[in-house]
Length: 190
Image 1: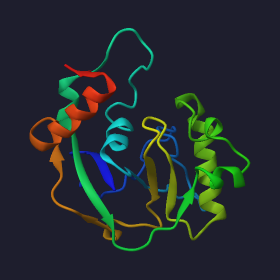
Image 2 (image 1 turned 120 degrees about the horizontal axis):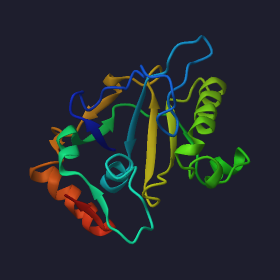
Image 3 (image 1 turned 90 degrees about the horizontal axis):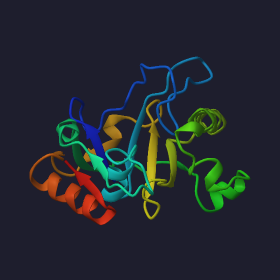
């Protein structure tokens, strides 16, 4: 797994969800007892991890190049993680979506306007499947890799192992990875 994380926090730390409005595809929500469920997002590869965070809000289809401000990069690092145990993930792609009677456009392919609805799905799946550690789906931002969200009341930091140190995206090896993704997708870092 590859994670792009805010450098004020440990790479394997879960977001506790102190804000109330939905901020992402499947967060934040309270469980059936009214407790906020912390979350951790990660991805199958570098491109999905970068696309789901750094490139997330960039316009697509414009004649002008999409631009990521150089100053934004100071906040981000990239790390590889491995699960120390098998994680039970609800599949929200392929047969998993069909079992739910859904298509990607109605759950995993929506834009931010659909997040209140997708958060309700996360809450319902969390409540109905107590064995589930999280969700997995095809990244909307980079649809050839999977994105993953772990429920922090079921998976824990100790379940994740860093495979080396986190690297900043602004310089060094992290910047090389970011620049490769930006060049491949036509994103300008300025």
